[in-house]
Length: 163
DNA sequence: GCCAACGTTGGC
DNA sequence: GCCAACGTTGGC
Image 1 (cartoon, rainbow, N blue to C red):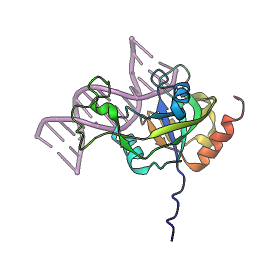
Image 2 (image 1 turned 90 degrees about the vertical axis):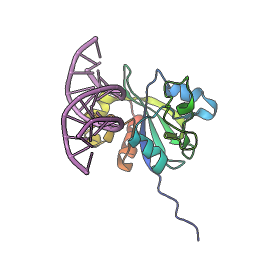
Image 3 (image 1 turned 30 degrees about the vertical axis):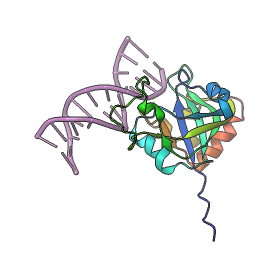
């Protein structure tokens, strides 16, 4: 008997383009980057406990001139310890984290294609996306789950010109 | 640069 | 286990 394949899930992952832009990720070997620097428990738990290889990812640029969704990606590894937590020179260094008991976990993310920028104002103006987690007021999570119906709708909109 | 809204921490 | 204070995120 074969185990049932877990259903594909979908995520939105924020990156500051000054740190790692979608172009940076595309330029990396295999268009794949380790999602370093997450230092919040909720976002970490999504990566550690819920993500599966092949899950769909919306690559989102935050803290920049034009925030929005700029690419389609996928989860490309199982969770593993974020190496930057042990790197004294890294801004993400965490002196309290131990090698034998790492506090911060990440996954690799592979960009499948760059898209147009589906901007935050466009997302907010779309009634079908009214309850998209990342649009909730004051949302601060760098990783949020995306409902399959939102995923399908956003993919459609990414292939249409800006309204 | 401002500041609302939040996630996290830590005192109790 | 509560919850006030703190520091950070992130859009504007």
